[in-house]
Image (cartoon, rainbow, N blue to C red):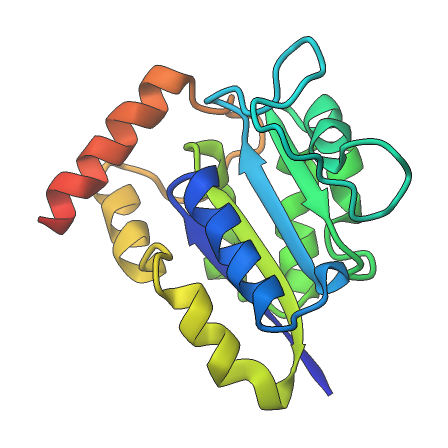
Length: 187
């Protein structure tokens, strides 16, 4: 039996390192999904990626990040083969991420925090693995992941109560300020 694990990261670069490590230990790319804010323009408005490597996990000759970013309200997705988990992203991350995560077994409370984290510039990795690999994969995912309980408390202290699908994604400046806040809180 397979389980689905999700973790939030403060930025796309940290999350892509985790994806590479997951792949290096034998997790098939078809079982890994990454969803990210585009506030820092890893996907440009001209349809190009700021990274030189192409991400084409569905082998359709289109960069998956471009496909997701073009449709997702400032959010881009590289979607592996997790059947239907993030399919709702074609509409927009605001309308689809909560339902996709809860359908995959993420609690409503955690899904709310993950969605808000994406809106504020974060990156979400979701991976499906056999139950026997859970502890090994969680160790990889947890190394640089956001502590979701602490992040939720920080959001609530600022007046946040739940993810608002109508709220716009953070700008690059807002993302930088948000990350600075979390760095100070961690110190």
